[in-house]
Image 1 (spheres, rainbow over the protein chains, first blue to last red):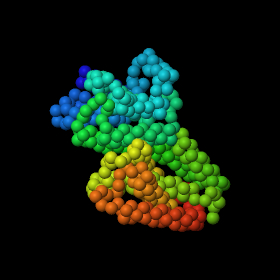
Image 2 (cartoon, rainbow over the protein chains, first blue to last red):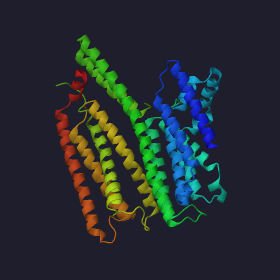
Image 3 (cartoon, chains in turn blue, brown):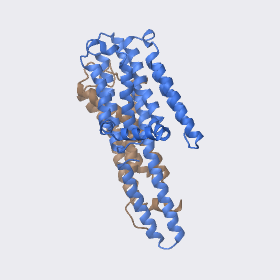
Image 4 (cartoon, each protein chain N blue to C red):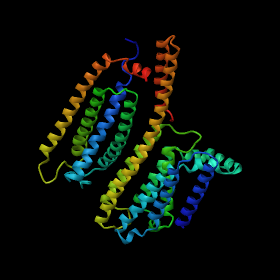
Length: 277
Length: 164
């Protein structure tokens, strides 16, 4: 099932990207690569019988990290919504645009809401007394993947959104979500999910895997967010340098123009830090 | 001498250094004391819930601060706005502050884990916290120096921006 979905998604993406390139638009090939890689990670996480190589809860944690964190990061970095908006027929695009503007979607992609759904769901999964079937449900990993993708999508905000949340909100949400993930991971060291009886060694390995594995993905998310800020600052800087070169070229009133440019620069810097890049 | 606000990138240098300092402290704690020496324990039976929450928060903040600190440093270099004394002051303050918090609140109050097991922890605690205080003192001294040199060098970034 996962394999069919993955092959279909990869084929669609590559077809769309190819159409874009044939049309003469630029679409980095690296994006195709991360998209495929993301789906490959998802398939490996869900389909490989990790339980035959690893103790049961550690095996589950490998699948959880792959499907819920690594695959969503790769898939979101490939900017599938941007690609879809640029390639689908007009009628479909209208539907897609109104979907991205729908009230419920706008609510779900608010970073704190997406974080509560993703990490809160994880807390429920590991800490609430759920019926035993839930932990072995075939819908568990697709659900982890969907929640992880929603969270990654909202924190990275790479695809166009009506009201892109500002950098402080996205960075703050990432920090709180990463902390909640680390606390949950460490607490599993001492006590497994209620109603389960995993061996202590299994829990300890799984707990450390979740703690440090989560770190790696969260660092990658932080690098993407910080790079957006860095690029926005760079654009602001180039504008100022252009302005002051123009001011020097005219010769007249150089000091005043340079002072204005510097003031505009500082003002802009403040705005880019506070607002969206 | 041109007029203008005194040294626009001094506080940004300080913040960049602070974040990098917290990152270095968190990295040394994790890499050296947890992974290489195995002195610190991942989990201690006496760990309180508040200890777990504080650990999770500072653990996450350590990594994110490292990333943010590196990008801020790159940005300061790019705009010729790095004031080295202010940056190093931030590094010392961040490092010392994180270590002092770790050594007092984490290790002693919240009993997250001890510095080393199977020995009397008192000398380790005193050394740990004394080093933290030394870093904080160095940070304050550097900051006072940065304020003096910053005032002398004020207006410098604008001249460079104009020349580029």
